[in-house]
Image (cartoon, rainbow, N blue to C red; front, side, top):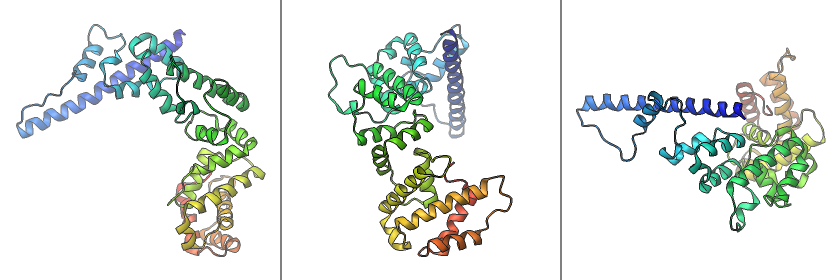
Amino acid sequence: MRQMGQTLWRQQLQLQEELVDQIADRGGQRREQGRDHQRAPQHCSGPDIYHLLRARIGGKEQHSFLDLDMLPPELSIAILSYLNATDLCLAGCVWTNLGNDEYLWQGLCKSTWGHCSIYNRKLPAGFSYRRLYLQLDEGCLTFNANPEEGITYFMSKGILVDNAAELAKFIFCTRRLNWKMLRIYLDERRDVLDELVTLHNFRNQFLPNALRNFFRQIHAPEERGEYLETLITKFSHRFCTCNPGLVRELGLSPDAVYVLCYSLILLSIDLTSPHVKNKMSKREFIRNTRRAAHTVSDDFVGHLYDNIYLIGHVAA
């Protein structure tokens, strides 16, 4: 507990110093502009944050915590967003008013977990967003150890309902879930995977970039197999659905996109692996890909090669 408090203390002091430096720079720029244009300084309404922070850091209360109630709400939330659930509880002991502010905890919940089934329900009297935040944090920690137990925990607390669409929205709107455990869970719950794929919008995205965004949310397995084939198949259909104009213009189809995706993955490995000495040339990539995807133009396939060559692996 003492170590957590010291960590929170250091984070707070660092943020104070950064805020003071930023505000001091802005104040200096404004004073220089005032001299150039010979205009009287403009005074802002509300507390003078610069002098407040400078007095806190340089005065007698140098080692005390800054009262976040004296800062704008946006700045307070930005500071608290760096803390985990444990440190937030410690912060609530220091800043009592903020620790009991339900609107603050509601904002922290919805900014961290964008969708939960409980958000759409009529909340009972005495409902606490602070308690919900701690439950969401506990559920994610449980999920990262055992996915099934984690989802069961969320359902037992009434946070989620056993509905594939709701579970997919929850997964799509949070980044607190371990990607390895999430991959195991989605491999077992293909109904949730189907709903998760439909939440992606690949409209007007270049194929390699769309594939990167897809694998950033739904991580590819480390080895080839049935699960990877399933992911690419679902992505190919979703990409064509989101880009009907591109499909007509380039003569693409889900099968053609499937072939292109596999070619991009193999090319990514070839160009980025240090074990491959003889890298595939652009001409070789175009020739090999056109053999499997006859309807795709050489120019389009060449642009695919350039993207991988310049940006890197699609599944990294």
